[in-house]
Structures are given as structure tokens and as C-alpha cells.
Amino acid sequence: MNLEKLNGWLNFFGQLAVLGGLIALVVEIRGNSQSLRAQEVAIIAQQDVDRQLLLLDPDARADYAKALFDPAGLTQEELFGASMYLEYRTSTLQSVFSSVQDGILTEADWESYASSAHIWLGSPFGRRWWEFTKDAWAAFPGQEFVDTIDESLKEADGRPDDLYYIELCETMGLSGCATRSSDFGSDQVDAPEQTESSAGNASVRVPVVAR
Image 1 (tube, rainbow, N blue to C red):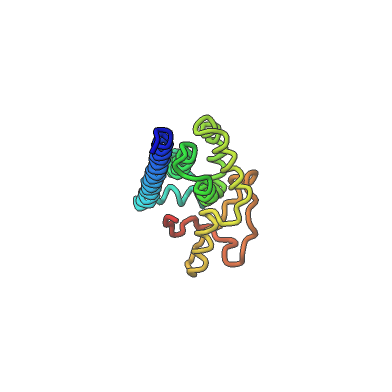
Image 2: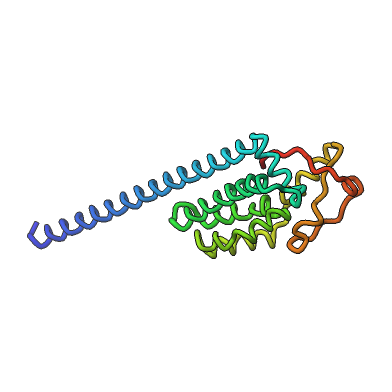
């Protein structure tokens, strides 16, 4: 074998070695990305668990229930408690959004989480709170975050918490089911047509659990 052929083979094997190294690097990066994504999903899941545990506290549960069904009657202390609950839930969305910006989670992950914002921001109280606070969210994490939530509130076809628990109360056949407040946030949300079972009820207490 002459020197020219030997150099050709050495060059060929050298290129193979470089290609093998690049493949190994891609596999390692992909594995690290999947690991980071799994860790981030676990963190967000834990935040959801913490949020549910928050409503096990009777005072926190009462504050949020009153914000849903009698928002005009909130005291300043109750307003603080209910607002903190909404902030906590919106902060979970912020975590997802930031992870997408960092390339850890995907746009599909963000769209999935953002589409649920109407659950806690779609009630009259939730919409008023969001309108009041969204300038701060626009500053951080950014206007795109706010625009996506606004779009979710505009296009949501599911029920916000207040309507969900009113319907649950009626379905369970409980007495004293609440109605959606008509004197709070009426400029933000059109009140739904009242059913015979809910019209005229003045009570504001229905069972509240996290969903």
C-alpha cells in the first residue's frame, strides 16, 4: 500500500470518528433536553398539587368561594386571600411560559396550559383581577404572555370556576345554590341566562374543590 492510499484511508477513518462523535453529542444533548423537560414538568405538577393543598385551608377556600359568588361583598382581607390564589395559579402559567422561552418545554405545552386560564380568570372577579394586574404581567414575563391569556379568555368554550360550581351544586340537588353575580363585573362578562333552579337564590355558598 503506497503512502497516498494510506493517507486516504486515515482521512476516511478520521471523518468517521468525527461523525461518530457528533452523533454521540446529539444523542447526549437530546437526552439532557428530555431530562430537563421531565424535571420541569415535575416541578409544574408539584405547583399544581401545592395549589390544590392551598384550598384545603378553610379560610383560603372561603375567600375564593366568596370571590366567585359574592365578589361585591368581599372585605379587604378576603380580597387579599382570593387575589393571592389567582396570583399563585397565574404564576404557574408564568413558569410554563418561561420554560418554553428557555427551550425546555414546547409551544404545544404552553398552549395546553394557557387554554385553561379561563377556569380561574373567567369569572367576573377573575376578569376584574386580570384586567387590574395584567400590566405587571406584561412587564414580566412579557406581552406575549398577556396576549395568549387574553386570547384564551376570549375563545374559551369551557366553564369558569363560578359557573362550574353553580352547575355542580344544582346537579347534586343541593339547596341554596349560588347564581353568578349580576352587580359585579357586568361590564366585563355577560351574565348567563338563569335556569329555573338557580334563579332567585340568594345564597353564596357552594362546595368548592380544586380542579
